[in-house]
Image (cartoon, rainbow, N blue to C red):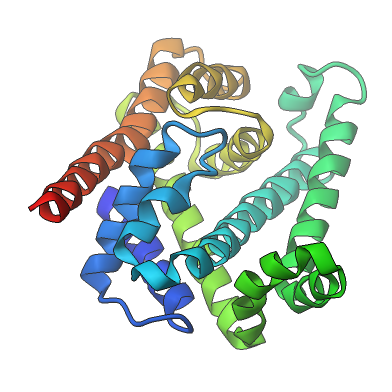
Length: 269
């Protein structure tokens, strides 16, 4: 499923680049993997564009950076939205209050308000990016930046929703991967309970400040705090968390590093 995960991201990247230049699906896939190698060295994977733009024509590279950010915003919105819905279900619909009973007083309310506000802000920025472009154009010293993001204003609502749907499919792959690994590690939690808990887990990971290789202990701690309330298989939970980190981050980063190294060799020649 790792290949499906990054395959969906490659297709999304191909769609994002379409107003700028046409890129083959193979190169889009390579571009995404190259971006993975850079994200391991930057906070919350913000340096993803550093690897991706290597597969974009040199004259288009600055204009491609906002397109990368737009794709990241769509993925972040889905993560925050699903996490918010997961929190709402666990707090107001589910009779199972184990997760909230383990938290300090009012923590769940604060987390819910922050995530709901973040989701509202992200979807507003994502669907109304043209307003941001117009605003930057009105400020003289920001007009140079606006010149590079004006391309974002060319996306129709239909195209933006299509990109958003790909982000949702990729999110579901994340969830299914984790659920399957937990089952393999014999963590005995039902599928639907696991699904709801993992939406909260990915919300926490999206909001927590992390840098590449330092993400592992935070990931392990967060998954353990959430899932150990429903299973005493501590080793299985930690092994599944480590497995997801290796499958979705480390392996693609290694492949991406080899691709970048290959590009450097070709340029030197």
